[in-house]
Length: 464
Image 1 (cartoon, rainbow, N blue to C red):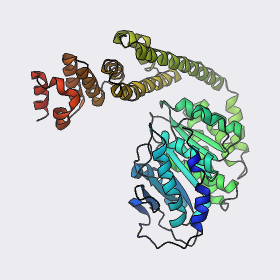
Image 2 (spheres, rainbow, N blue to C red):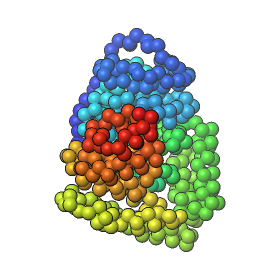
Image 3 (tube, rainbow, N blue to C red):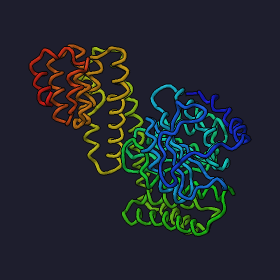
Image 4 (spheres, one colour):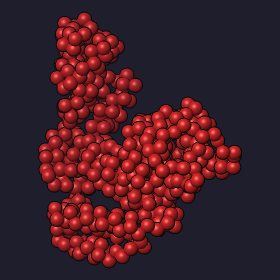
């Protein structure tokens, strides 16, 4: 993922574009989405555009480039829509960014969108932002590093490659991660490093799995960037906005403390103080943070967090080792794999309401991602269907309600010659909600089952 050089020419390209004759106006929607716009420099690259209802070309506008890891441009842009309308931001959300593969599609998408933004939408060159989820967050961070032209990045559920810690970031970074996201720990590590580098940063945790931050946090990210822009002199100071945002932020800290979530409240007060320092008086926030930090409950919560974070790190190593052994020893029994992964222990710990339970649920989500997606993809590609069936069995133990896992398990078992087990897994898929009769009847992975009476019954069950 060191492919940052292709982004280096973007600043020069933007300067050249700005010197050209103004383009002919496009028919665009104000206050709404315009979908499927083709980039002038590369029509194979398209994006969804949001222009605030007050947009005109006589002033400069902040712009947010959005990178979703599956190119879901409208869904991703929708998260930022209300904040863009309120604060006057242009949104350009790519249809072509991807994760879990080569960097080239992302380079192509960014290289097409960058001159497009400068040429058509009267953007403020000092207020160019990027937002991304998962691999899209990595694209945003790499873009900021390689161009030096971003004012900030709003990143959700991403991670750094090891070499990304070698070169400092100084642009503003607002981050978010789900409490059971497999990239939760990487996001905490990133923001700890950003703090050491001295970059403006803030990290918010929400209660969910690996996904985009919810819309309310996307709004908070935009508003946090507005505050940073005021601090840096990139926009005029707005005392009314400062007071409104301070009141909301401090109110959330008070709600956390009232609910007994003292560690979260202490961290929120510390974040409030850091966010508003230099914009207004922060003594009450700083005092609240200091007061809570001295409580025995907070000290105990920190001890428990440290304990279970260490457990998580050790268990990740254990899981890595067990799955690596399967790769080198495909004859490993499924029962041995489940035992080595300590799956039953994790499921038991996941029932706890404490941080122990959060960590166990996060480990289960991590294991699910490895077994149901990454390893399954790689093992199918390599033709190792027996091992694929084993890791999918692990996934089915974690999330038995997911029909796609049962269906893929049936495909792996059918490919490896276990027809009876394949039919059982297929029946489980249908029981869990699988309903694609056409796929069931035509999937080449299930070819060995077509002569089975049980298979014909399952096809008939779906009306095929």
